[in-house]
Image (cartoon, rainbow, N blue to C red; front, top):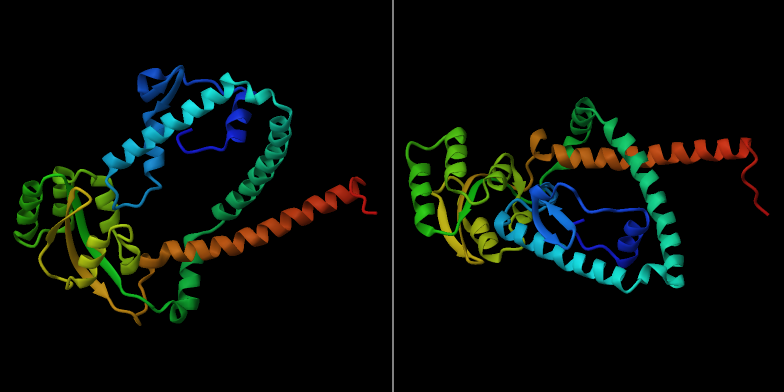
Length: 280
């Protein structure tokens, strides 16, 4: 419960018996008898952009949770869950939540049915349609609050043209966000999709020649080390690993649509057979 929830959802959680965690020894924040666990924060961090400062992001998650929990407890103190208009909205919300839940189950069925061989077949069949409209880049990137620390990292990177395994060691030794740094350097990414929330880094990326030495810049009170290893220009056909995620998304859209139609058809047939549907 670390992200902002509407009041209806908060009260619904109380009605269905939501209770504070008894794993208080693992908590990173507490408001009264409610606890935010470290595992909740870690789970949330996985969905954030890889170039964010994880320390700053964790602080924002914790403070947002505290604000939400204070609002939640104040709503309970004022007995808002007993108001007739809110009870009516809760009933409507519960129906929507259940509908969304069963659709999510259908989508999960479809997602689990996608195999790597299907991704390969899609790539082979549509490779000419997957031409780059924008450049793809492969980079090395890490952050730290100290410029001197990144200078040491840069020196180690440029010695003997550090391999990927050596770079990974450097990341875990110097970066304040090692997991994010490793993730963003594992593959090729659309150039214009990187650092969109950081104009300084975005400009540096676009103006850096592939294969040049690492550079260090300051942005948002943090120092960033960036090296462009390779740039594949617009008009090239991407390699499968670069766009595997995109292809999987396209297959998911198609599979989900088909699976949803099959399930709706099955439910209708079953309801008609049991004489549960009547249209006047």
